[in-house]
Image (tube, rainbow, N blue to C red; front, side):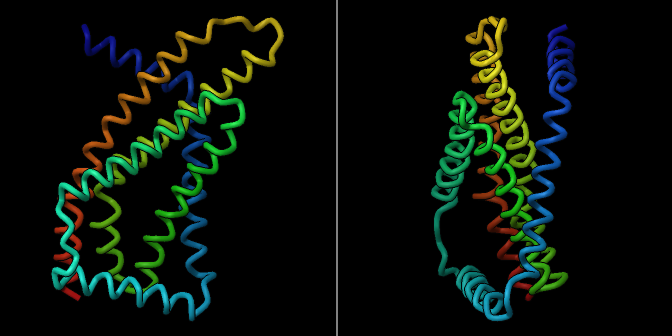
Amino acid sequence: MKKKRVYDTVTHHLHEHKSLYLFVSILFLMGVVFGAIVVNSLSLTQRHDLFMYVSQFFHEMNNGYIVSAPSELFVNSFTHYGKYIGFMWILGISLIGLPIILIMIFVKGVVIGFTVGFLVNQLGGQGFLLALVSVLPQNIILVPAFIVVGTLSVSFCLRLMKQTFAKGFNEPIFPHFLRYTMLILIVGAFITFASVFEAYLSPVLMKWIIGTF
């Protein structure tokens, strides 16, 4: 019975916000495509300089010069993603936060698209494998989490604007605020798993792939 209640709640939420989820997802994908396109717009000098920097990082990592403890990487990753989600939550409860939330979603897509596009552009098949092990594991969780948080933040921001400016709209905002905050915290908890992947799994896989170059 409890599982059915959770299922019904999730289904109702997705149905109620399906247009926003679609919009935010498309915006994110546009960012990914744009990031991949930006790689091709770089000059040969810019590509060379960036590739030399990345190559140096790979060399140091393969030779054990980069020795940050997994626990330290986990804390850094968790803190970074926690701040990102927390900032979107704050923007969601402000009247001017809507465009910034959308920009953050788009930029997140750009970063992923650029990273994957650059590695594939410079290293071909090996770059694709490297992108697969360095970007994919944590982003299996992070991308849906950012899309959900972005959608929730946009939805609450729109509700707040409607509450403020629409005449005759007097629906209590506090229950929606509590629901919004709880959902953000629940989604935010999943970044723990993403941080574990990034700190403990990705470096091992990256070092293994780099060793085959």
